[in-house]
Picture: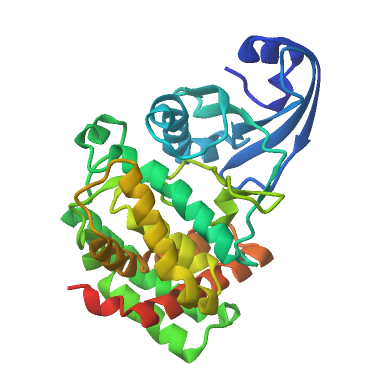
Length: 342
């Protein structure tokens, strides 16, 4: 098992990739709050021109805290990805070491794609493409009880709802205590109202489930540079079992400007549902899908607030979380989400 980027030399990569690597040039990509990512430019025979290498955090203590997320991503690429139809990067190598909580993934470098921008938002066409791709995750293993055989996969229970209620309400208070949040009085009121129902929301209509990404937002979607369809979903450290529309609600509620969402969301949800049917889901009509979409909007402020409070603060991160909360709160009001939870 490698210990860091310096171990990703030509000999190790030759064995991992099954070709002959002559030279390696590593360039750091991103800031890596959960770990480190490098683009490896390669020369040699029978190897790609470049791959992305995802490694665990340099600090062993930090790795130990998030080791479960690393293990989950290795499981996704090695076990789950071949059983679903969502487009993801090709994974050439994946390993996790329990003793050191170190992880290494060698992933396709999507040179014809660019990362979505959560702060800027996306176009309706991008949202539509990402929604259709998302159905390829949910549909093939819709309500598949064998998902429970995977590591750390379980249905949410009352204890989970109680814990969420316990930590989310004070997190909302903490978030709103910061003037930098910059929310309108209306959005602040909506956000506080989500704290009152978060626990109940977690268990509402939760009997219909699928494998979910858990953080399906624009920063975790790669879009084609030419503007065509073919988005790719990345960062699979937060997979779990949950009502599937929470992924779609999170994408549209946090990624589209409210005016665009109001205009296009019904068509996008219908296209997602049509794609589900194409993947064999036959016991779930469009009306139920729309209801679950409306309910899903609590996911937006929930993830944004907890992400802001419990991760390292950055200037861009603060602006991104604020945009996510504002867009989600508007969606919650527009769709009457809070009135559906009981």
